[in-house]
Image 1: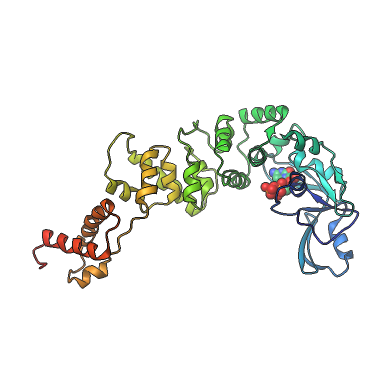
Image 2: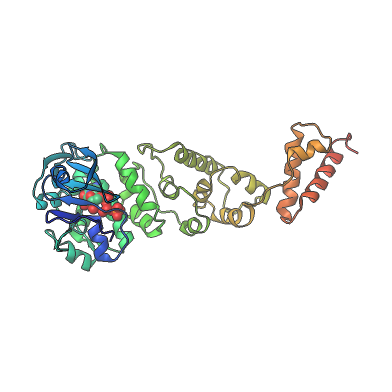
Length: 375
Ligand code: CTP
């Protein structure tokens, strides 16, 4: 665990960082809670520079001996609008009340910065041992449906199962989803879940009906497991490859890049190369070359053989010859240039070893054949 350089009897590590330390995993960030008012506490720390204060949330950022540290006050919350961000009910409540607003028992443990004692009001230690994900109360998913995705994320990340009652609450919620929710928060959890590139997460997402949080239409698990293509070809935007396959995800606030990936996949899907149709390598290359690799991988759910062939054998083929080279040959720019490049590309796809000189030879041949002006 990243130990911070500050100890106090009321200061606790809390949430994910405690869970990760007990599991022996690396933590992404260190959350600290002061049992009381963290802002007042910050003012009493010798040599601390206060960098930022957020009064409504009772949080403070300080700099101490060169280290930036975020400290939250213990706080209780309510969800006046179910599915949206909670509002703070009380700042400087008890540590127990702070813990009870959280998602799962494994995320609800605190560890004293002073003594190292673990405070476990909800049975988180037992659930860690038994590899269970358990909510703290029956309204947990109603308050915050993104927790259904968080449960999936943690179960895949740690190899845990949902406790039976928690699974029942999840099923009940998914039968009666309140679509008035924060899709920004949902998107964040989708990203974190599917960036893990774990096929079993996708199986559970679909088979347990979790996808219904985002897509209103039915959706089935694709037969082809494309996670190995993702591991091999390392696209940047992994999560959208999974989530973008669903028929309608317009509720999610996608970036321009993500929207383009989904649109390009849909364009390809309209083409629908039938599984048994024979396509020339040139046609496959042309169909995939200028679209995002994420869209190409998505297309593997329609025809994985073509996609595998493209990614393994064709993707990196590039012509070396340029328009400048054609100009140097004395050929003035015209749409014929493109035809010429396609002619050479077909040769290069058959023989990827083709050198630039050979490409130029084929260019000459092309213009000799198609136009009489070239000698
Ligand atoms: N939390 C919650 N409900 C949410 C999100 C967060 O109760 N929808 C609580 C949990 O106690 C969690 C803590 O806030 O441990 C911090 O949230 P976050 O940083 O998102 O989660 P981590 O548990 O730290 O997970 P990760 O390792 O993925 O960062």
